[in-house]
Image 1: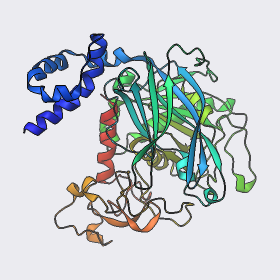
Image 2 (image 1 turned 60 degrees about the vertical axis):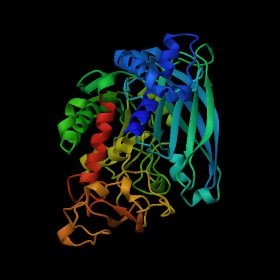
Image 3 (image 1 turned 90 degrees about the vertical axis):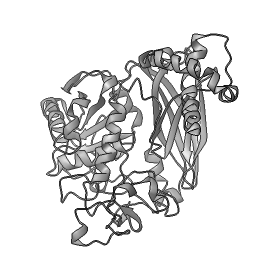
Length: 460
């Protein structure tokens, strides 16, 4: 019990240390000293903790705007390098004012923002990118390539530094890049490249208490504005027909940004179809026909900046089957395919909740995407390296591990081999799920739990 109290005290002390130092200039606090004498000052710290307002915590260090850092991520299958591109201030902050520190540890990469005066952690988020996926393709074994990427955080009021981390071959985060932020730096731009009208498809409350989704159009011409507005409404309606989104409708805001393209549709390189669209989406990303994504990261971010957002969703005006999504990067879906609703929600599972694909398909152009000697970070995949921290607690005592693909287990949570694009060595929690196929119409229990946890993290 004493260890638990001390551990709790240490966590709380780390959280309030920068606040104390801000409120009492010149005061110096040493954590080691504090821990040795924690019984003497514990009551004082507890009083400070209970009296501090969490909104004031945010306002002490951040403005209600976004600091955006664009950089180039370059390399090949075995190397990576970071190069600063530009730093911008955007007019809205759509995220939580309470849950500033990431608790999931999802993603191939990690962002941390530190107070420059005392190195205290102010903000963190995990994320992934196209570059991480490209590194697993055959092309990456013979070419060097660069990708535009972006990280965002609430705008610091005072000097801070941003650290970017990348997972190594053992799944550990290693520091790769540092940017020192000076609020007096007049080279930080406030210029708006894309200013377009926005509209509301669903508003449930203030942005800081909701999951804010911004829907961006690609391949909608000037005459398609009405169609895009209707597609956004349909997206909102369809999303809340699936569990667990259905019981959390009041935790979401959904806005659309109207930005027309010259041409309708999207690029289809294998058919020599090239369209002039505002976000330059394309099928055959990484030579996979159904994988529809865009490399125009800055256009995506510029367009999204017209509203506060947590998640970016791109709707492509075509009935061709396809889409794609990357955790805390963006999600893409076509608007008019027969399976559009399930594509919407499947891709959002990747982009929002960090869910992995539970299918295995030789047509996917990845090589050893999930090394079997480390545990995947995705909550719905396991290599059994560290299954205890996955969904072991959800298993019935009578369910065998691994779970055979027998009918009596089809409706149970289990450990079914095959997932993450591999037939062997990677396991999924259900025989079928919307992260596996579209033959059903529900997420498995593990995916539902992961989605629910993410909703509640943002909607505080």
